[in-house]
Length: 65
Image (cartoon, rainbow, N blue to C red; front, top):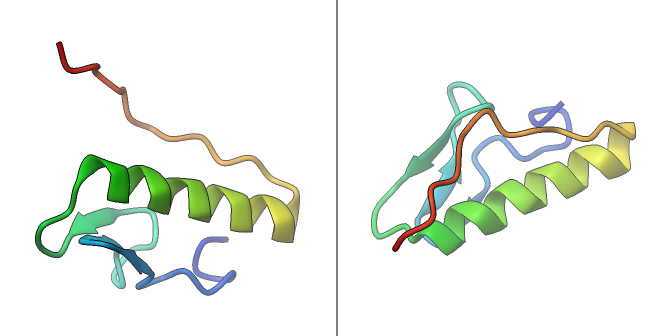
């Protein structure tokens, strides 16, 4: 679905949706956590609009203390 909405290779800051497998997000240099979070939100929003499917991350967020 990510690929079909045209987000394969999309970037925000140093974060990029992999061009090899759209389910992976990579750091292309200087990525900040906020870049990754914004890119995840963009992907989820676009897929929701196109397919009415809510994607869920397969990661665990660990807060910095």
